[in-house]
Image (cartoon, rainbow, N blue to C red; front, top):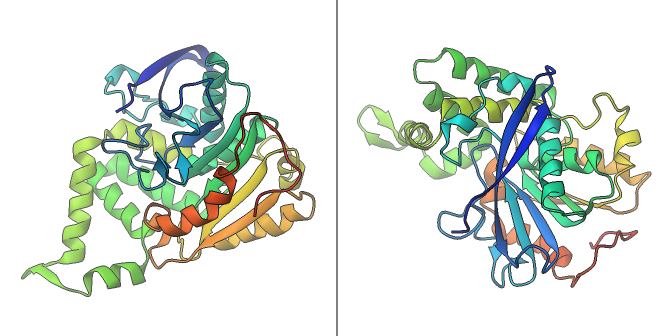
Length: 335
């Protein structure tokens, strides 16, 4: 596994106006920094910077001779501050409501400056990681050649905010907050059809359906590997995605992004609805040529971006097969 490295960002001012020191941890894979085009990978809610290798969560997509080829690219992944992956309790964030998705993008941008990275070949992320990718692109419109937000959106919708509000209530009031919040979330990450295909109302024990056992397993597993503080922080970031707040209307903000934008949505996603992405595509296509959209077909809902690797790789291969040692903003996206 790639070693976990650390950057200390001093005197970062939070939304409440407080100044604090932030520990930003990261890992790199593939070519060393400075030796090839850089792909920034943003992790999802309970993910981390360990993208590939032992316990890597995107091994099916990234690696030697894979869709995103580590023999050709440098892979960089930051941990969202407060996610607990560094196992240092001092770096957990208790005042989680002082942060939002834009703050995380700002911290990632400061991390890039510290590493002397001025251009990124691509930024890719699923779910909340994709939302942070949108925020980074809006913050630094000239930074990224290929922006690839997957199963996400440029804003948290009312539906998403509602579910994050429920999650926050569970996390603050339940007697077993991590397990209960995770079980609730799992019913949003999948679809009724996906659960029917998997379980067919079968029972493991006389009084326990397999779906109940599966939810208990996911709740217990997260409790054993994640902290309550980290979950509260990640949920807060998820509910606060909005590239337009304080900047203007969507087209005004998004049209400034120089990147080729490759939207990847999921037809059955109950969390980040595909209609939102299609509306974004149609609206932005009127003022921006270099935007494409692809739709994963799956019954598995939001989690399909971690399941349907063949479809995802098919969409992404044309982007990453391009040999590029220099940054260049191109007028049209690779289809």
